[in-house]
Image (cartoon, rainbow, N blue to C red; front, side, top):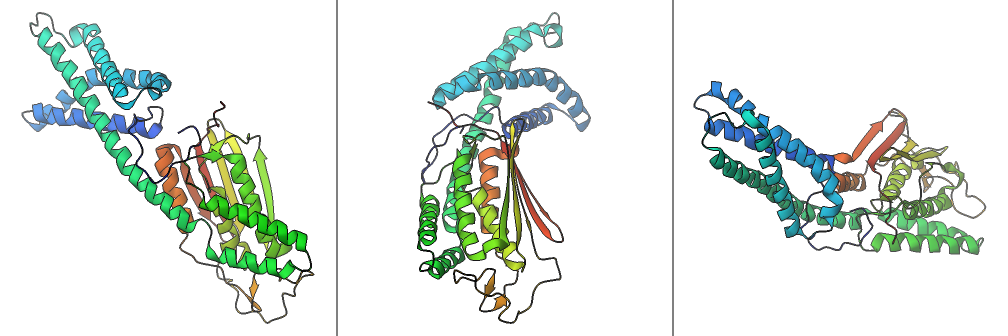
Length: 375
């Protein structure tokens, strides 16, 4: 998943989980300890015995589990090069090796003096290691298949929600307003619109270079500025982020569209959208903030004439038929889609936070820092 690749509406091939993913690690810990608790319940004769048996199981399980997670983290690049079933065999072999090593070197903690069942315990612990490992891999394979279908549904929603119909109509009207007075600018606007829709209708991808997303967003802003003029301003703050960083496609443009549609359009004086892109260690941070109409101050109908046409013939501002538009209350399908895609792609390693103040709206996203592979 560290490289941009086109993925159509097909089920993803079987693959081992990413053992370097925080969400995967947490699930391994939870499922393993859940199985240990189940074993303690089965072995106990009464409730009072459950904690004691659980501690005995944990004394063997904990060092095995922590060692396995560490080795799998180190071996992840090698496991990525194996096909699925060879990877399954490798992970199971690692689990058995660690289980027997901990059992053997644990000495009297696991093999009391005078015990004559050492061989039986060796076979039993090896089988338990394979059983627990197999249960985990089956769970992750099932989860991958379920998420694959969910990701397909999310991609389909992207096709439906990428660019709202109102944007198309507004842009065409703005171009018609300047096509005679400023034909060169109208031609540039149509080229930008073509690029924007070409990207929107292209094959869905998991990740794309950041430079592509920034260019697409600037084309969108240029089209919106065509009809809104100086009322729409953008402050780009890019903090030493190389352009080959990978992010989910159409992550930034829907946020800007939301900022324009739900914020700037409703303000008579317009406003400035602040965009911050930066790296913080192994995280990529993205923040979009826009002003909006203060709550309780929604505009009523405004008499005609308050928004005279500019020199190009198009009205500068969000005035339709002489009336100032109210703040839009759409269903925010695009923002919900962003949250779903971040969760599906990065699990617990991505964060999506929204802060809505009295007169501002802010969206902050944090996701793993990934760079495009060079060939």
